[in-house]
Image 1 (cartoon, helix red, strand yellow):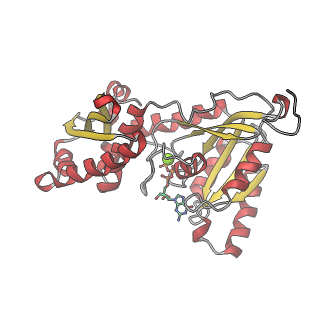
Image 2 (tube, rainbow, N blue to C red):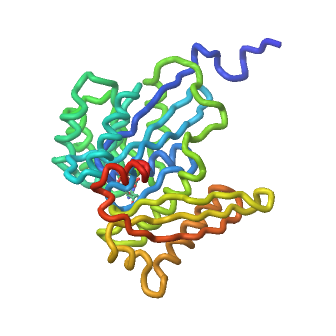
Image 3 (cartoon, rainbow, N blue to C red):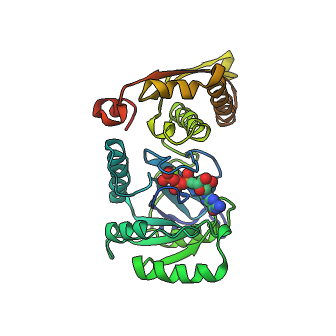
Length: 305
Ligand SMILES: Nc1nc2c(ncn2[C@@H]2O[C@H](COP(=O)(O)OP(=O)(O)OP(=O)(O)O)[C@@H](O)[C@H]2O)c(=O)[nH]1
Ligand SMILES: [Mg+2]
């Protein structure tokens, strides 16, 4: 049966491609990815340098498949782990059909602007700019800011958004879709990400460490999952994971008085992992000191960086 008036568009009208989400730390890149997917796969926090690996998320639209690569925030790093992490973001640019540059409209940052202008030399690859957190900006200030960024990066379009509240995100998606090349879907219809549930679980635990501890701990912490086992015909998943820190005193801080801090981290993480898996979760957490791992290339590799 032929019916040209309905069904999916012909392949020649379909668009697909890789969009790399790129920008300074803490501007809301991972928040936007989750918003566009309608699912939380990327962890977020108020602290800079939350994302450490490239996170792939597939947005399926009637006439396009858009594969987003969320990347760690870029800056001029000094510490070995941060050098590694920034390299992840720079390497992802090589895969981009389109670069979605993100900046924080509420917190103009000249150093970040210079960094982006230097890294994204004009004409290299098509760029769309999203100015995020407009829920925190007065309109007149926003217009000036849009003009400044337009001059700085010469993007194909500049779209003000609020990733947290969803404003402008559909418009941004339409704009990006129209800039992708024609092509068939590259991922199966039901795929959301290339990350395993085990990896997302480790990330969700790391997010709770980021959110529940102060200045020093988050950047000294890595999480590995030792056990991830389905039981009771899939109704329960048993997980054992380790939070690695760099120094003995940090272990005490993560565990907290009478184990209180670790308990809260575990409860928060368990709740989110249960939502992710749609099952009950039994989560056991351990804390271990891996001396100076953020400066040790072998340890970094073992933790996935
Ligand atoms: N007010 C407001 N806050 C936002 C918005 N989008 C993100 N945030 C907040 O900004 C903070 C950083 O968000 P993330 O998504 O983790 O930022 P990121 O760019 O991925 O950060 P890195 O991974 O460290 O590079 C979080 O506290 C978010 O809740 C927004 O539209 N408005
Ligand atoms: Mg992030």
